[in-house]
Every structure is written in C-alpha cells, then in structure tokens.
Length: 285
Length: 283
Image 1 (cartoon, chains in turn red, blue):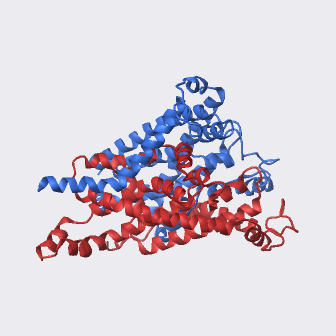
Image 2 (tube, rainbow over the protein chains, first blue to last red):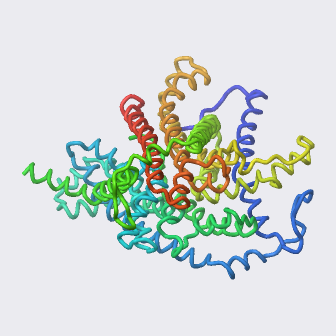
Image 3 (tube, rainbow over the protein chains, first blue to last red):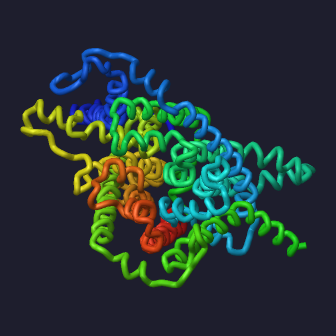
C-alpha cells in the first residue's frame, strides 16, 4: 500500500507516541530475550578461581574453563550425536508418513475429511508423560527401549500432528485452476505432480521438516523414559544438571550448546520461508 | 470409476493416521488396562482390581491437581494478557521485521533451556533478587525457585508461551484485511473504535485457541515443573512418574494417567470446536 501523505504537521503527542511504541516494545524484548541469554553466557564464562557473587555486577574474571570441562569430562558430544541421529530418522520418517496422508486429506474429497483433521490431533490429546510411560512399557516389551529406532518411533508419533497440519494446509492451498490448466495443456499426471504440486508443496514440507527436527531435538519426556540410561540426548543431559546436583556453570554451557542449532534453524526459516506456517497450521482448523 | 478413486484416497490415509491411531490406541489401552491391573509388562500376570481407583484420590493427588491446575490456568491467562497488547503494538511498529524472529526464540528453545534461563534470573542469588536488593526494595532475597506457589514454574511457562501465542495472534491480526479497517475509518470510526469493533472481535477466537493450547501444554508439562517446581506438591505428570518408577505402583500411575488424559481430551475438544467456529464464523 502506498504511504499516505499527511498535510498537517504531526503533533508532539503523536510524535512522542510513535517513538514510545517501538522503544517500549524494544525494552520488553530486551528483558525477554537478551537478559536471560546474556546471563547464561556470563555464567558459562565465570572463572572458578574468581567466584562471581553479590555485589559484583559482572564477573571480575572470565575464562573458558567450564566450556572445556563440559566438553572434556561429560558425554555432551555423544549426546549431540544421539540427538542428531534421532532427529534425522524422525524427520525422514515423519515426512514419509505424512505426505501421502496430507495429500489425501488436502486434495481428495473424502467423506469425513473434517473428522480426519481431528483424528490427526490425537497425540496432542494424551499427556506427554503418560504417553512416554505407557508407550515405554510396550517398547521395553518389544525390545525397542534404549534404541535409536525406539526413540525415533516415539518422536514421530508426537511430531506427526504438526507435520500433517502444515502439509494439509499446503496441499489445500494449491489452486485447482492451475492443476486444471496444466491438465488442459496436456500435462500427464506425473508432470502435473512434478510441475504444479512439488513447487507449491516444498516450502510447506521444509517448514514441516524444520519443526519436526526441532521438536525431536528438544523432546524430553519420551527420550528420557525410552532412551535413558543407554541413550543420552542433549535434553536428558541438561535435565541431569538441573536436578539435585544443580551446577549453574555447567548448565549454562549445555543450555547455550542446545540453543545454537535451534536459533540457526530459526533464522534460516525466517530467511527462506515467508509464510507463517505455524500460525496457519495451529490457529485454525 | 468413482468407487476406485475413493479406495485410493482412504488407502493414503493409512501411513499418517494409521500410525497415529495404532500407537495412541495401544498406549491408551495399556494405560487403562494398567489402571485396572489388567496389564503387566514384566511377569504378564494380571488380575482385575479396583485397588488403584480406591487409592488414587489421596491428599498428594489433590494437592498435585490443584497445583497443576493453578499454574497452568495462571500461566495461560498471564501469557495472553501480555501477548494481546504486545501483538497489537507490534503490528504498529516498523521494527517488527526483525523483532518478530527475535521473539520467537523462546518458543524454539527447549523447555528445559527456558527453565534454566529463568531459574538463573529468579534464583536466590539471581539477577532479580540482586537488583531488588541493590535498589533497597527488599531487605533479603526472595525464595522464588522451588516454592510451593510455583512462581518459578509460572514464570517459565509465561516466558515460553508468550512467543507461541504471539505467532498465532500475530498471524490472526495480520490476517484482517486492510480494506475492512479502511472501510471503518472511512465511515468515521477512530482508531479505538476500529480496535474495539473490528480487530478484537475478529481475533478473540484466535486468542481463545492459543489460551487452550497453552493450557494443555502447561497442564501436561513434566520437565519444567520437575526442575523449577516444588517437591511438595508435585505436578500431576511428576506425581504419575514418581508413583510408577519410585514406588513401583503402576496401577495407581495408570489411574492418574487416565484422569490427566480426560482433562486434556476435554480441552482438546474445546480447541477443535473453537477452531471450527473460527473457520466458519470468525472469518
């Protein structure tokens, strides 16, 4: 939309308001995001020989001691590897399972299509811990406990609803007239699929894969019940630092390590995908 | 030919919905059977019993229920009270292009990370207490972590849920077509009237949807309340897990699971009904 030109000069209060709003919003953001993360960064860099305590505002001496300590003496690299393996299996499996179903719900005029959209939310209707405990019993009977496949199968279950929602919305939003036009111009079903569906589905698929990957990386309940103690993922390692033996410095390091991949992925999403998939998928039915 | 096409479509439902259906039904079956003593993963010996249902309603259960309900209702309400005006303000600022990705960070970081970041701030020697001490507002640090009121738990959930709500609310507010607002302005409405009669009525159901989703997530949370919450009362998830693994009382744990699931299902039904209303009447 073109910017409107005001004839009257803007009054002082209006100018003040137009300055106050961004400043206020910016302040809230500072308190919300920058302060907590900044504190974690500072704590992870505290030098153990110069403890940081009241009334010092900033630590007097910084060192990378805790970073080296965590990477040398704990299983964090193994945990990162485990998390990445599980997340990859989960994402591939989730996409493979969701694509045909989302196509059927989004494009085929099935009787009861609306019911299927509700059925796909079923995993959200079961408390995470209840699902973990009782699925964990089944998996230990089946010998799937303490294995990558077991954790990935469980993760697929809890990430499928969002993937299905996003893909269904994507399939629904492909305009029928473009498909018809392609058919009219003599495109065979395979060509129609390749030239019309694929380009319009890929952004949704990428978004769905990103949410699935992140969802799997940060899932705690199922990884904890099904994977522990044999397979440690990054969240279960952090949990061990936040429990009875609360180690603020080590927890800071693990926290920052856990945040980095998610923030990179988030920035990539913002850069490459313009549509707001999460809002579109969860905000309405 | 028509019939053949239908079979195709229903077959395609199997990978996604079949997977969900199978595992959800199986784990729900195990949970319910367990609560009546009809499932035993270790020895396989089963006998029907109502013992679990007689034992489940203890004081610690009601304490946990009250604690969980209170923290989840409060955090959902506080979150929406913060999010709604913030989303409206955001829409007005030009800086939203780079603010919007930033505010999403708490949603994208794991719950446990959020738990640590906030605990770090409100701990006995955290930044909040130190600053208040420095300003002489309080004379000694407040105990906010692991407190019986669950202030830390609420704070963490609010921190994590405001961005989630923001994503939903912002797309709802952006979704209002500009010409509707222009039309109202043209007919002489001032910006307050546009807000009251157009923006809020068109987004209030999105707000309800996000409150319900937030409530469900908080109600079922385990990680945050077990790291930042009190030991007594426990949250329901934590009580169920402790009952199962520490006391080895799987029958009672099954009962707690069934009760939690019932509450969640009720709110999921509310969510779907509201979502439907949003789709049909809201827009």
